[in-house]
Length: 387
Image (cartoon, rainbow, N blue to C red; front, side, top):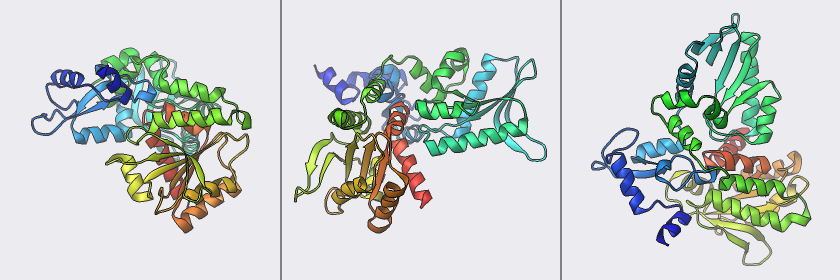
């Protein structure tokens, strides 16, 4: 009974911790510092919404520094080097160049360039980002196409250690660029992954390989796709968003409070999520953007969110109340004129930060190994840098 409760709360049991300490000789799995010198922490390799399990195989024993490094994600060059080694181990007869100089009158540096026995070339651009937004993916496509022009005829590839939402993946592939995501790498380079040196990416892909089919994230995504935009399914959508935010945000955030009114009862929001995080992304969000609570609205519109919808949630955001950070979940996102203009105005004049997340953004969070924090962080970056 106790184990079931621990599983539900996603906290490893005392017995599992003891096994991991013995397995790693009470040392950090990355830097090997001893647990006698510094308290070690348990870190999940694959998040639970991504199919990660509450099993010994999905956890590492890490020191606080390595745990933060793993949470932030390794440097991109580390993924480039890992993939280079995996391809070399899988196809030793191919000519494979790491950080190859391409072009003549104008030059650039490609992450990986492969030339097979028939002199056919494969250009591989690597991105280690856990969450890739539409805006980011468009820039990646432009970069790969430019590199392709410098090389001439070649197969163009984007390699990532995670998964992409279907819309973003299809957009990339429509530009004649193959996507080598985690599933592709596992299927086509399994032997090379097993032979590669121990690294974050080897542990990540190995964990995904051993993960269970039909993860919680995939189940929620399936429910989202079967929910029709419009008034008829508005309550189904609202309940589903509640399940999704609890899956993605909690912990470290507390369980969502549903349908909360302010004192005058003139403003009501679908969900209020208490933010008592003591460190990491959510703690930063509370300190920098007054996100004492995350105020959330769920709009199952068949249209885009408009100015009036932004003003509704803005009226609830108060420095002496729930704080100044809100999220609108909407099927089709926000319109450019009214919605975006009002969001910018609320930030510039009142320091209220409001994000609008559409179905593709939700899919990105459910599929990304970084969960909600990566996507929300990327959306905030895009917004702030556009001001």
